[in-house]
Length: 442
Figure (cartoon, rainbow, N blue to C red):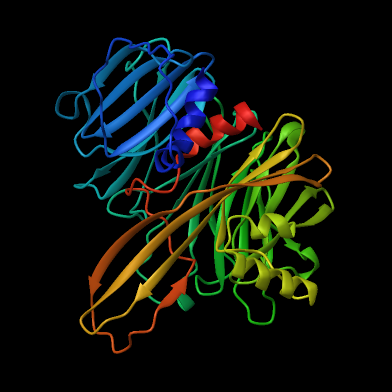
């Protein structure tokens, strides 16, 4: 029942667009309604046969559902005015089995001090948290409107949590700013294992941060890309341990270019996988996967996307053009495909979740218009040997428009794909639901 309802949620827009043949011989069962709780931030977690929804809009609302019947079991609320500390700003949730850990910040204005806290909720005692725990205090951190002061990641076994933050810099020029990251590793009970301040060997103008990860031994890794016209790949991994200086590991990847996304993540038995999309600036031509071993990058595999998948859901004219380019040996791929997530399974296989996303900017005399396009979700499964098992498109087409003022002298349309998705808009897809669908069907 749960599988069918989740799939229906994803495909509902397609069904609404189609003609439906109705039948007089069916039964409709109506259950007791429950109050809809909304929020500006929504989070969903599953454990065994239960689903927990957490929705934040000032107050923090909890709902617990039976995942099979979707009946509401219980609900609870934490009042912003009565129960939350003054200056409370939610950061992120992490799940560990039957527990959900919330991380939040409180700015101590008189002492000009950042304070990062956590507290733990459980499925068994909805809305009741263990005592708030102060993780650390530090100086002013880089943030967005008071949020996103920390980044979080977990080891594959959920036994290690890594908290990363960036110290605020008064240096305005990227070429002169050498960023400093605070990196803290915690055990499963959020006890500190080690903490380091890591100064980047390159200026902010010289490299791009592609994300941190942590393994089950408590070692941290930063995937970065050096910005260089000579080396378009420029990928490196910085390994950070508790008792040694950072180590730089270069990634050659046969000179392939990864403009649409690449990630590093731990799998079972401590294996560290590197996976992503390679190709040109617009089109993704294939899926890459490798393993980080003691001697560097091992078991590299480059899997080209089949032509029939590239052409799926395209117009006949576009399909013919793509076939002609492929016949002449020119590179072809899925345009504007961006990597979002890597799901690593117990058997060592990987599923890459990506979305076709791009923005059209239409300049004008007094204002410009941005047209944000969220299109197909693309799933690809790689086996433990790095071979592509399958790649599938889930068709959708969502758009939104935003205008901003300025002085523009041209009416040409500019397309670009590196704009950030904005989570405050209810477009794209829900990562939690997508992971459940992957678990159920793939």
